[in-house]
Length: 324
Image (tube, rainbow, N blue to C red; front, top):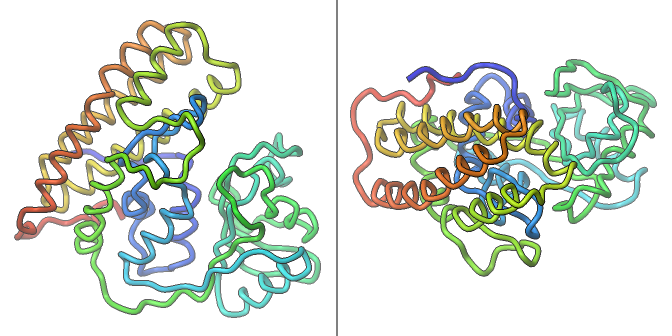
């Protein structure tokens, strides 16, 4: 199949690929390894996210780092001076993956200037005096900010899932050789788990998963209950990142020798990607109908992936690294 190649909000996967260096798989493969394509959540009966119920990028990064055979040092908390000291010390050992940050406070980006709670990750290369030098995967290599302004964004007070400020990962080391093939196979049990619903997941009251969440979102769309901010979030972020995640998962699993889940993921990607037009043009009837068509596919995908995990590993020359 033909992969999607182009822009997209893959900040944490792009940042991890930069931090790991030349041996890293493509950000598209890393995104699949985080588990992000395998579910939908409607948080607190309000916020629609095309990622699994109870999942967040911190969980996803830890999973991808592990299945790829790497270790790293993660630290957070403390005051701004302590955080800047940790950051400076980390850059002396190599690139530092920093985040989540509040994207609205990254003042090198046009239109920024106020906290939005939109999470973002970057790779810091150096702390040069009072200036932080970093690669911002949102289109800004070798960006710079005064340390005080960088720290304000890094504090991330409005980022919903952040438990402690000033989180970073550094000292990445490969403890075992793992191919993209092997990493994808190792990630599949977690994908099956994410597609299910467990009571122990940390989500706000009123949150719904997968088919239930999509049916509820369709009800809200049909009743004209979407607020302006939520509609804008769907238009500018949720639908396009969700469709790309599903497309990349389809390519990765098909290339790794798993054609049936790959087919279902491709179907999901096409259904979700096709909703961008009715969403933006205000055709809420078509948008709601599309959400209802997408809803049952998550249960189907879980069934197929569960059988895949229980079956033998594929043999032959399938190559998941075609996304590099």
